[in-house]
Image (cartoon, rainbow, N blue to C red; front, side, top):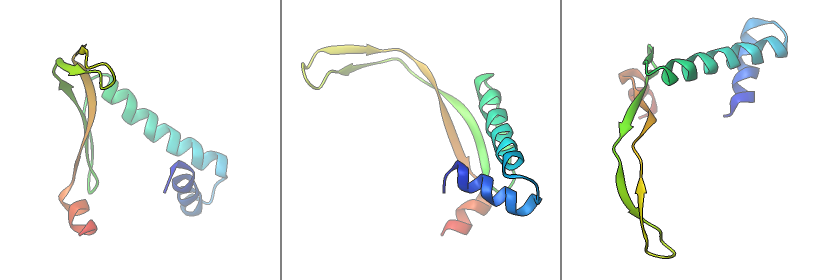
Length: 90
């Protein structure tokens, strides 16, 4: 399932236009992304929690040359599934 499939499912439930359904999906995704950019957390009951985590700086190796490369610390997205989602997937 991709973004278009989700928009089509929303379109089927809302009885609006496909453009409106795509806008709704875009708004939800943009809201989640903007909250994560600010360092916040998004909790959706029954689905899970979207958050960010700081990955520490580390040393890595270039596989071609074997040269050591310094990888800076960065924030990465993280998802923790809700109990209901875990049980539904089992």
